[in-house]
Image 1: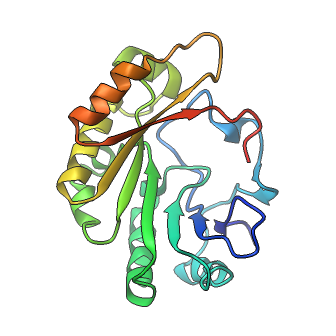
Image 2: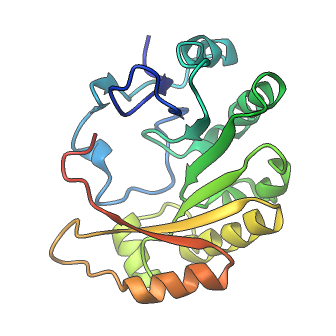
Length: 209
């Protein structure tokens, strides 16, 4: 069975658990580790999306007694499996209300679905981590190679929508992934704060986890 639920450390009882919903993505970021390796901590990340909610729950059960946070993050954009993610969030809220829920996202969900997805997840998601990656559209397009129009602006709008839905919003950039693209970290931080978000500068992990 391919990896749907995993941890990224060797702790016997890891507190943070990750859910790998899909390999589809509206970005093709030049620093994305999935172009360089197929696994996270030895766990195969590629799969064909042919699974059920019960499959996720079965793998989650390996961690249910130690999990304090569930993070939707894998080799794709979690919101592209919106309905499945919502179903598992509802399962967690019903059965493990103490567990915090976070989504790592590129922020394109509202543009993809042509609706306010953030409102649909109000009360289900505690926080989102949104990939800002640049302070301007031109560089963002060079780095992230989005497949949707106006991706940079749509990502910022989604951050505001999540904030309005009561979620904690974090926005991040990845730095030092090559010698060509220099990220203006200061300007990125200003953008994040202007949207009511916290900011994180994530140093590139060359070999991943």
